[in-house]
Amino acid sequence: MVTSSKPSQSGASGPSPANGATQSGAQPPALWKLLDAAAQCLQAVRAGQSTTTLFDKLDRAIRPGVQALLFQTLRNLGRAQALRSALAPRVPPARVDNLLCTALALAWQDGEAPYPSFTLVSQAVEAAKRNPLTRGQAGFINACLRRFLRERDTLVSATDADPVAYWNHPLWWIERVQRDYPEHWQDILRANNAHAPMTLRVNVQRGSAEDYVQRLHSVGLDGRQISACGIELLRPAPVTQLPGFEEGAVSVQDAAAQMAAPLLLGDLPVTQALEILDACAAPGGKTAHMLEMAGHAAHWRVSALEMDAERARRIGETLTRLQLRANVVVADAGDTTQWWKQANGGVQFDAILLDAPCSASGIVRRHPDVRWLRRESDIAQLARQQDRLLEALWPLLKPGGRLLYCTCSIFHEEGENRIQAFVSRNSGAQLLPSPGHLMPGQSQGSAAVRENASGDHDGFYYALLQKLAA
Image (cartoon, rainbow, N blue to C red; front, top):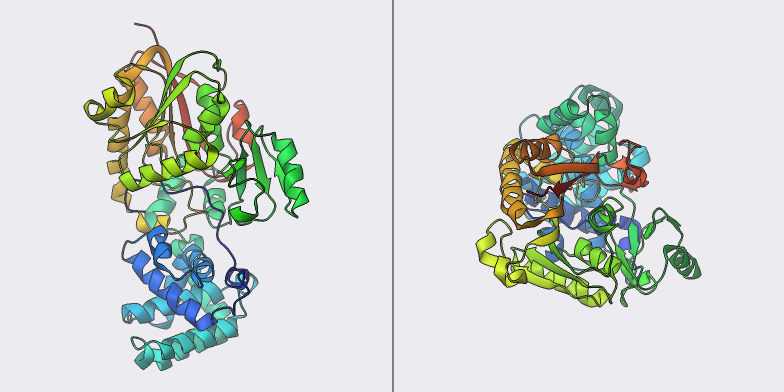
């Protein structure tokens, strides 16, 4: 995403084309139609639009299939662009280019292709013939793709030398990960192209994770417990199939995101009156988790900030489903004069969660468009915004209180560099034991921090700060 809002982390990696269009029992859409729609979406992503916005505009009958095809295309876009350049050195018109890249991204590797390669090629040509904008280039598209089928091994081998094609990330991204993680950069880039698991957070006020695993089994779903309230599904499933979802028994939340509430509040007594702030709260998962930990009889008062009114509405929807309450305020967290008195009367907070806007470089498994939407210059701009929020919120914290800074980013510039700089400027800030940077996939973080070993999760950064008494 090119905005600084946090993308949703609640979904799995997307449905398969084969099952996504037939859940209602209707005739599945023709493959050429899905390919044409996926190519149009790819064109929009390359022009700077996020997939979240695009999918909202799609016909519900084709949305699952198009999402699956587009996500796989985005995971292989570097390779597809290199292959297209080898087949057609002169860049063709945008609609033709994107249809070619879609077909090449899906067909270049037989073992990972969602359909047989010859089927993808023939249906891509059919899509070209059916669309007035590409009909005149159908023969050109056919010639390129047929040549690809004949010379696939040679073409793929030739493009292996291109790091963007080999790793399917922009070159600046690859180089930044190499600098930040010289020993693990290849593992990170590979993990970014894998499918993320669907992870659940059980509402401990409604039951235990152990019991919920049995509830899943009773409806034919398999899951394994990964933490006190976390369950990883063996296969993703629609939330409508999750027992008790509508009644608030469970939520969808990545295992890394589930660490926030326990890190900030885990050892605080629920009987103590506490003022808690979730400073960048949408879509409300972490706010809800803190309230679930508190219980309905607790004396914790939670304020949730979000500067975008539509995203703030989503916080309300999340809390309503879970039958939880918080003071939701639409405001810029960095402009404390705008909201502090409204939120809690201008009283200092005992605990602050700052899930800062970031590049989202840790969640590209779920949002494969992010790597192609981001620009290298965005990172410095986001770092300035992160510094601004830290400096603005720190005076609102009571002496002895805690601030948990987190981002869904693997880049050091948005994680440890920000905290090191902040602590060096603020002698009253003490860094407590924290997970630090979590890499996507099976964490290779420090075993000294228990939370670093919570199975398969997104990339994240966590730093827990305590405000020393004056």
